[in-house]
Image: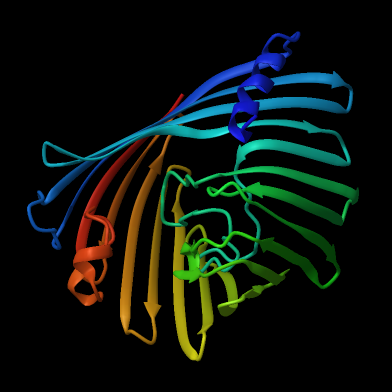
Length: 359
């Protein structure tokens, strides 16, 4: 029986038990954008539709044991003018979970997220979270994930992930905290021979690989963190180091400043490529409804600058987001006609309005 076909069976079994609670929720996102950098034969205006309905079921087994499940779909349509540019309809999440005070097991299409970085996310091995995306959605992985909590300051993770070519990768993580900060140690190995793209660091890994990482965070007057990772395959070696800090200035309701720096070295055969990135984020709430966030990123070696500004207004069930971006044009990238996506987002000077409704 294939991996995905197990999940509907699990939902069926749980749904025919005596349910304690269930809920049906959803998130609708509508947006329109325009840009100064428009691909040939496309409109300078783009509209996007996204809907994520979610069914959640929970059953209390005993006073400290719970089994719950989630099924979520993702419907998306992007239009260039009145022409359909992209259409996706797929499962977004489907998983079944058991947990108690000291243990958790989750099986199915789920997100696995860890690490301390907020902008230059070195350890986004299994997710695609974009800190500038108001929706905050991320792709999931088909996996079995186990977590143990033997003490209040210690936890252990283990996972087995099914890849697209029907191979299984596996790994684990240990997290603990003490008086000098929070620590994480992560290991993962993937025997798949296919090319794996790690989008967070814009790097591809060739052949089977092993990954090792250490991350650390200290929260004091100034927040400090570090993520260091090694990705070793039989054809390449990738080393990344990310350093970050944040501090809240006593301006108005509090101006949060965040800065991160990442150094990346990619060795392939006898060639080595070094890249360095710098990111700065400033965020300030205006009352309980509005927030302004600004993010600037720089690819130091290629001298590319990326600027992002967002005004968000959040209410009980919906939010409005006004976004202005200044990114490099497509022509500044090599082979831009062949490999870059056709969306207006991410290129040139852009304006976007997004409405998000949650029910």
